[in-house]
Amino acid sequence: MKTNFFRSHVFCMSFLLSLFVFFQAKAGQASEQPALVLDSGGVKVYAIEDSPGSMDISLFRGPASPEQRSAYFKDGKVPSSINVFLIKKEDRCSLIDTGFGVFGPGHSALMERLADIGLTPDKIDAVLLTHMHMDHIGGLLKDGKRLFPNAGIYVAKAELDYWLSRAAREPGNPNARLAQSVAETYGRDIAPPFTPGTEIQPGVTALDAAGHTPGHTVFHIRAGDKELLIVGDLLHAAALQFPLPEECPSYDMDVPAAIKSRKRILDMAAEKGIPVAGMHIPFAGAGTVNKAGAGYAFTPMR
Ligand SMILES: [Zn+2]
Image (cartoon, rainbow, N blue to C red; front, side, top):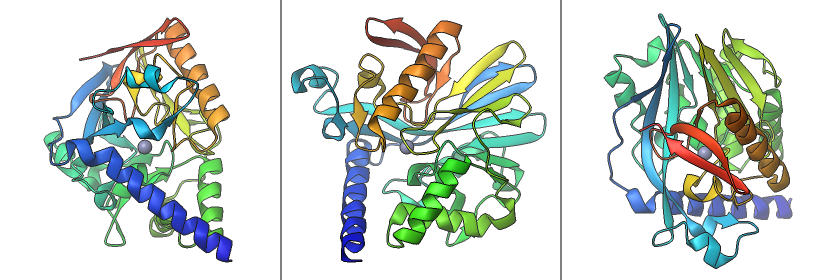
């Protein structure tokens, strides 16, 4: 009991500290206007910046020497963002992740950015989750109520099972508690949890990318003759992790699995020429990937 109490408080402190580290460089900076990152076959995918930010060098571990790692950082930081993506097909609107909402230390701009596209929260039919960390599910709730009244929630079985069992074991864990609140508040609108390989909606398929979290998911979108991989938290510091894909932030829960998933998905993107879009790749978070040396080169779309 004592050990659990201690562990959960260490987790709280380290989690809150890392959020502070994540945001400190860009506090107060406004997010950018939504950007169209795919437009094909009647499907539009928008990148929405919930919040700008930067990643601190102290969060990363891996085979690189401190000197090698620091070459990618300026004053100990690299640009990052908290992005969410919107899939719009005719009248049907699906969000992929929701940002921090009211649970982060910075301003969450998701609702304002949705309004820029002419959308109110009731127009969102589905929310697909790459995973259930606070900066991805926070935007689902406010004051204990759901923010998307008509949305079904789609999450991997391994992910939901993990956070609900952790909430039972560690009721003081803030991330587990939030995941549990989401499950309880959305109730019957939590769709039957999916397994990797499932086509969640026409043209949108869940791919296993476990490692960052137990059920971390990449979504493959096929629209007309175009494809896009929404890669979630496969990368946190694009400038560092594309060239050195074995570098991991402290947020990666299973480091060997996270590295394996990162390389497998980026290999796929490079070999098949499929653009990637990530939740923490600097806004607009999307671009193309090529193999370069032992890692990858990323070319942003804009
Ligand atoms: Zn994240």
